[in-house]
Each structure stands twice: as structure tokens, then as C-alpha cells.
Image 1 (tube, rainbow, N blue to C red):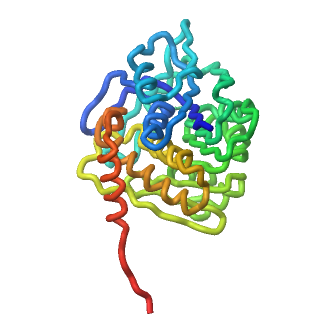
Image 2: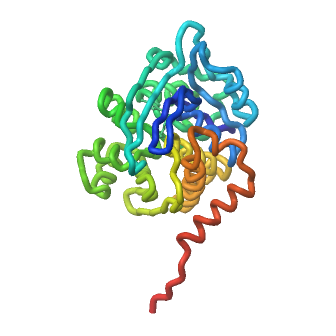
Length: 307
Ligand code: AMP
């Protein structure tokens, strides 16, 4: 049984108040697979790249035992490119460029060796492509996590809503939840989004943590207060990758275990923002990850006896 991650493998150019990068390796599926690899094995990557993508970056997936059998290489086109600039608060950003390139006609072919997929992470991509992946799996996975962003709400809302109806959990940020639902209150937004079909919803609030909803319950996980947030790019994908990585490792999709998965996701995301790109989420030791998770436990633990 395996974890399948579909999403972008990309070049990003990032500008934050701390500095600027040229094209570096990014993409939702890059962050998500790397983060998941700290928690589970048998990770399969489904994506597309162009003729300009370096061999060494493909090798890095192999180094983390992430299968690239489903990574299509288009010899006549360029890799997806995204560029963004963060505001001083680091919670908001402007997209400067989105060049779909190879993504424009991406046909997500699922290799037979990926068909034992038990956990599916639909990383940020065209919603129609995300749906195709679900349809092409012979057996519906036990649990489907879906990410998306404002870009798709702007240009493909109808398809997006159709895909959301097919998944178990949608993971979006607060601005996206408001845009998707047309509600300012996140509680109202959550009710409306859950009515679209998913059993659960996570609303990420950047440095203010994340909320997990189902129709009856709410759980809140803080973000770790960090001295310096260097580059938030990929934090959401890292969060989602670690989240589903924990679920895949434990094969437990109870609300209690989703709560634990959120803490693992938040811990990995807190590493991601400490450096540009994927730099901080490669080469972490087990001890570093455990210490960070412990910091979360310490942050929220308190004793109150109610009489
Ligand atoms: P995050 O900061 O978690 O929202 O994710 C940032 C990553 O998403 C970057 O590495 C980008 O390459 C990728 N990305 C940006 N825009 C899109 C898009 N429209 N579709 C898919 N991936 C995107």
C-alpha cells in the first residue's frame, strides 16, 4: 500500500523582505513528497517537468526513496514556473508570474505500479487534472487530501467545486476559504465548504496556526512562534505532505489521529519557512523532527482542573 502525491514540480523565483532567489526548485509535489518522506515510505510522485529540469533534482527524489516512475519529462517544453513576492508581514504575497508551460496540457498518467494507492494527496493543480487522477485509480483510496489555491478559484471554480466533492479533506488557507465560500467568518465558511462534500476541512492561518473542522467538531493547532520567518513558500505543501505522511504511516483516519497529523504538519512547515525553498526540509535528522514536535506539545500543554 502506498502514498501517491500529485502536484507541481517547478521552478520558483521568490522575493521576501530577506532576499531574492533566481530560479530554484519548488512545486507543491516537491515540498509534499519530501515532507511526507520523514513519516512514511512507499511514496509515489505523479507530475510533469520540461527539458530544463536538472537531473540532480530528479535524483534527490530517488535519494528520499520517492518513486519518479510517474514523473513525465516533456522534451519539447519548459517546466512550470512560478514567481512570488511576499509582503512585510510574510503572511500575504503577490504572484508575479505563473507560467504553466508543461502543465498546460498535463495528462496525469497513473503507472500500474502506483495503483496500490491507499492515501492520495492532490497537491495544488488544475482541479480537472486532480479529478482525473481519482478517476484513473482502479480502487478509490482510503483517504484523499486535496490542496488548491485562489488561482484556480479565479479561473476554474466550477471544476474546483466538482473535485472538492470527491475528496475526504480539503486543505486551504483563510483567504482561500473566504473566497471559496463567500463568507468572512471562518466558522460559517467551514460549514459551507463542508456542505460541498468533504468530510473534513483544514483552514491554515499562516503564523496563526491551523483549524481542523468536521460538521460537529473543531480543533486548533498553533504555529510555532519563530524568531525569523525567512521564506513561507511551500509551507502549505510541506504541512499537507507531513499530514498525509503521518496518516499513511499509521493508516488511522480518526479525528483524533487527524489532530496528531496536524501537529506533525505544523512542525514540518515550521522548518520549511526557516530557509529559502526546500533547503531546510532536506537533510533533517529524526532527532530534529522529534524535538520540533516536542516544542509543539510543550507550547500547547496546560493543566486546568475544573471543579
Ligand atoms: P505554497 O507556498 O504552499 O502555497 O506553495 C508554493 C508552491 O506552489 C511553489 O513552489 C509553486 O511552484 C507552486 N505553485 C504556485 N502556483 C501554483 C499553481 N497555480 N498551481 C500549482 N502549483 C503552484
